[in-house]
Image 1 (cartoon, rainbow, N blue to C red):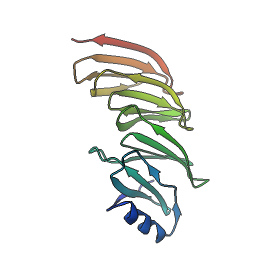
Image 2: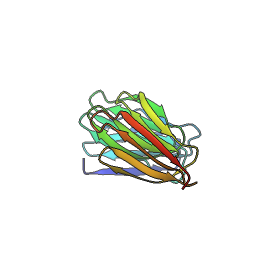
Image 3: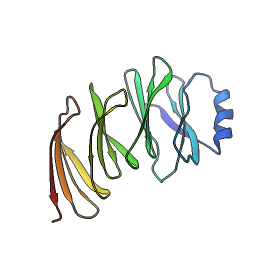
Length: 175
């Protein structure tokens, strides 16, 4: 999908008023705890995904594949069935969602502020690799995720890129 836009709204009331006038498929609103930012993602083919979230400086991210859309923002992931036109799961992240790392037929991996989580497309957590402090940098090279936390702890672990499952873990400690 090439045409995806974030439409910011002034409030929840503003969001709800705008949704009424839209021509297309409007999904259930996913609302994170302590939401202070409101808007919707407009996707080509007249699909609208409304969300409320706590603004921590990171924009909502969207992944669409086949008949599924996943939105990550703040402390929440929301999965939508494009066929059924409804919200099918929400997942509370350990802290703050940062980005999608990997998708395959079996699930996906996200980077959270303090680690990584592997999830199924039904929103079930398959594994998590959580650290004591925030992730400073990381890279995905083949099936190996390696990086460093802000306190200097280096890490690396392997995942199955075909099933998004955790294979090995190695934490190196401080340099």
